[in-house]
Length: 245
Image (cartoon, rainbow, N blue to C red; front, side, top):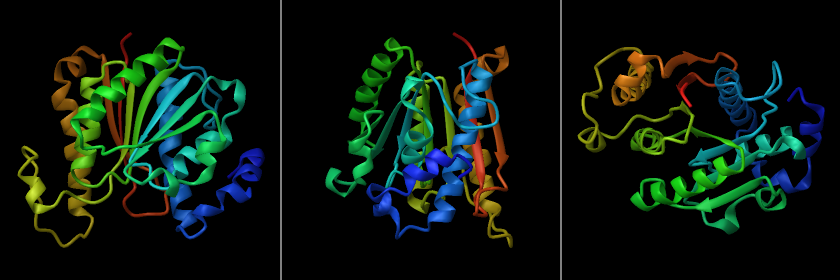
């Protein structure tokens, strides 16, 4: 990490819970997602810092956060005066979550099933609370396998206060789950990444299809690109922005 203060914080003993992870790969993927968030903030007119990921006045919801690497970096690289809040959501029991989430007032962890209908209503309530505190909600999802990526799009569709979504998809849906996804079907191909990028394009199309009216009116901006700085071949990023008030 280029930010020396963030590096010092992340070297603290409370972060050592993640030492058994493929740390270099995980950090590169988290940074790719957060750079996409920073770019989205710029397009949405949210005050931030040029060329970095120091965010201001945002409420980041990290779906299927795992051990919380992305949330940890957010907390380390954004100082107290930034008016930010970072919410990590996963099915892991709270006692298995790294202690740093509990030692930083800007960070919060929710033990929830992302596929549950109840979560959408709960999340909508939290989003409205954060908007009232002057924060712009942004939904991020890294390593959202199969239907989880589609569920993230459902949240983005149903909670209008969420102004941006950043997805970095991972595994494709299973053959059984594909029956729940209209218009997606794997193709035979020699390239092992062919269907991964087919899936990424499908997710982009799902956002565009759900929001076709706003896309045509210029109120929605949806993009798909790859980040070569991420230490993985599965480096697609899909970003959707609500450009209106």
